[in-house]
Image (cartoon, rainbow, N blue to C red; front, side):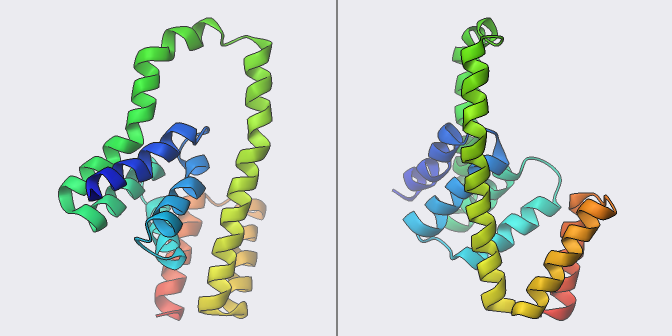
Length: 176
């Protein structure tokens, strides 16, 4: 039953997670933290931070790690397969149809209407991570990391992966 749960935990977000890995992360978080209780929000946010620091698609890295933690090596395989299966099925069966209607005004309008929903899902996830950070590290560290991340990303245009690694180093030095 565990492998079926691992499959569902990553397959369902893969189906409804329009927009790729970042858009499906809040859906994966719901499945892993709230539905199956395999970990708490803090653990999930640590896996997300670590996954963001590594190269490659975030969703498959998280599926592999969480699947391994829950079900061992075969659990990792099931998690990664469940993450890529929706895209694989859509590419195999629907590519021809999508290509035919790619310039349709209705398809473009549908895509434009989905974006605010994705933005809200990411905003809720960011708020949960902010809340967890505040509860576990305090207001000082949380505000410092927020301000430094904002400055590094927006003012000095530092690549996000460098900012993530910097956050990991900061946490290892000041929060351990």
